[in-house]
Length: 253
Image (cartoon, rainbow, N blue to C red; front, side, top):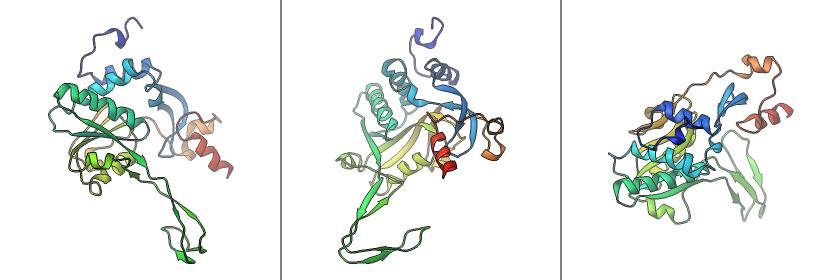
């Protein structure tokens, strides 16, 4: 630890190498056999959850750096997707407030996971990619969603405001795109996206935003299951992080 980054006076404008050293210091970079969100397999994984418990030594520093990349942009609110994005939004907003000497708010988008459909009369509904479903009168049908919503009064705080979206790891950018897509229904303006790590070579064009800044850009070796050398060797996939457990559940099914 003597030569580690924690013993250096903190300054913004950390290099990518500095951030990687910080990730390594808190064992956020893992080796093993992992299944990524893309369903591909690989030998390396960034476990952002290893950082969150270390508020002063890691998260505050990282968020200060993220905030510094957007000092030349007018920002009223920082928003992050639950769960890790809640922490990032709070700390990035804190540092923007300190640096700009004006209040920047922090809100979060939560998953719109399900709703209950309970018709008064028997009816038939059609869902994309599924056959027609017959629903009896008074019967409850739980509909699961994949998008995000802004609730708890925070939707009023964000209306008409300039917003920075923050995320920890951007793999394919799907989560970020879903948060950016809230721009129209909630009537705010996205001025940019900040992330700790761009893991999938995602561009601002992919996210449909004007500005995208990530502290680290990495590309990991990844293989389809049929071509995975670790699968060929019989190495078990990790079920502690990544999509390994879902992969095994599908195999059993």
